[in-house]
Figure 1 (cartoon, rainbow, N blue to C red):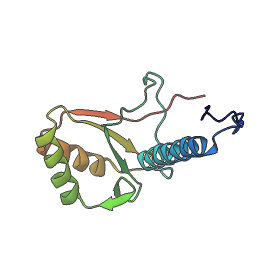
Figure 2: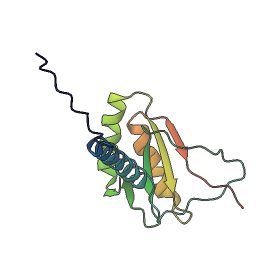
Figure 3: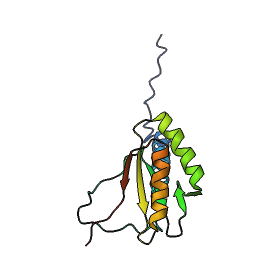
Length: 137
């Protein structure tokens, strides 16, 4: 007595569900990285030109402070007062002693506004401050 079935296995084709999962994961990954990159750079700030400036990309842990012409301080696409900036930098310096700060200053910003932001960095014990510049064309 033979109890085995002699049916031929059917070819099921390509498995769609794993492919859809991978596509959705890639979509989520690219949306999150695009959103993070968008938050880093405030497009309304026109940084000055410098011949000796170094080309470099900020690392993901850097704090990017944008200083507009009217003295508005923008971090992560939200405006801050000088006291809020000082408090945020103090918390970061407590967590990460070598915290880097990238200061994107508009060309037409006043010098006293720049000094106030640098003073907030100094009060928070952050000494790793760099200025964003572009090379002239």
